[in-house]
Length: 175
Image (spheres, rainbow, N blue to C red):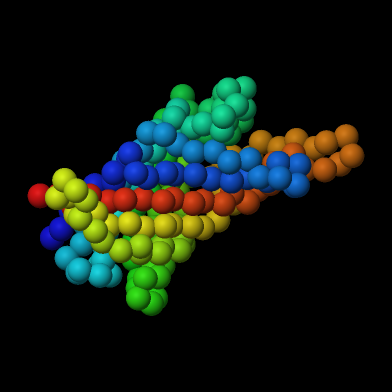
């Protein structure tokens, strides 16, 4: 069994949400951890776990970040961690996989399906074997209890329910 740990310095965990339904606001988590375990060289039997520190959320706007951490959204005080545990990692083509797992956010757990693209494996100058993946998908924030909403004077929606996820990760093979 090969075990890989995420290389946080070469990984990013981002999300995008439409604001006023005309532009995306991008945010990310700066503190996170992930483990991948696999017997197969092509990762077709991979088991993946991931967690992020909700208090590490940033959208480059302190006031908005504070609102996201509040009970209106993530309720970081009560639910400081979001987690994902894979239930399957199915190879669809040479470098495409369907990643299915249980996402727990704000005390709500739902099965989600994400697309994973395997970027390859390489050995860095320090002799570390690394595997790269780009993982994308969409969730509905309402499914996870992030129900805050507001309407503009003209009747427009402030924040969309759909959240786009994009994770670019390098995993380091453990000795």
